[in-house]
Length: 125
Image (cartoon, rainbow, N blue to C red; front, side, top):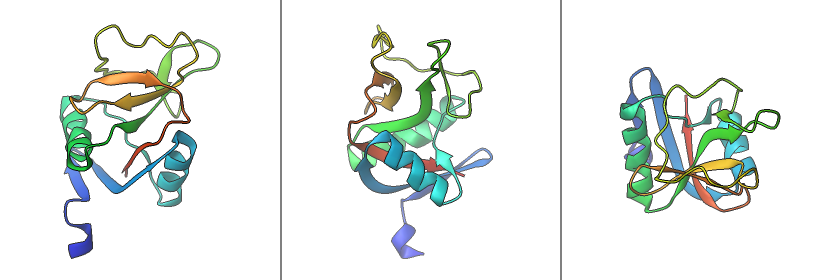
């Protein structure tokens, strides 16, 4: 249990966890799915704050479980459901289709980003 200290947080009905590793979007998503979860995707301010806790702890930007939908060009949760909560940084998203993934900054705001950058892996269960 000591090895997991600070690596798991409960928020609402979700458990959010991080292994502290920075990888590209596909690898982050795969490691979360292998563990039985998915990339963390905040659906309210509390969940955004819980994810931000890991971003600050590791001092690394993190990918969120949000992607630009191919057909509509709109950002949606990985499973395709619309976003009911957003926390975009000022003037974001601005990638105009070239930045299909979403990262969280160390202030908790979001930015659209290319999916090949190395970002912190944070999963939700």
